[in-house]
Length: 124
Image (cartoon, rainbow, N blue to C red; front, side):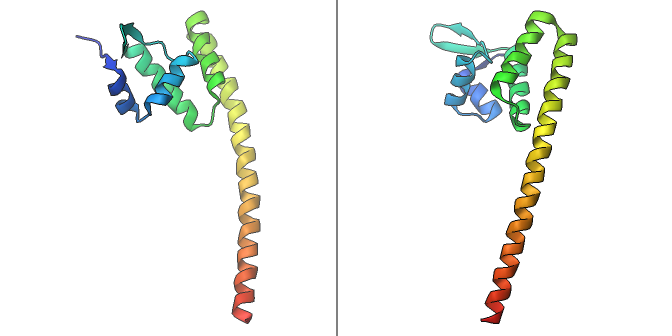
């Protein structure tokens, strides 16, 4: 069975990212495609890395943290990487909880201001 390889355009389409984003991920060494002349090819490893990168971004994890986490796997293996992920996820969960609390306060304040304004309009 042939392993899947995507060219640059196919990689952008598969993950719905712009060429600029894909080039940036390469520039900061999140991805290291195979190069043949000016062409780039992404094999299963790079496809899996891109999946993890986008999942991490969805959760708000910083690109540098993702880069370090992916590097751990290459240098130290999956056990150390899993421990690093747990620590990274704990930090991000705490940050997301704080953001949610701040959003709840902002929503309550805006709702109150809106209700007061609507009430004033009704009195006019």
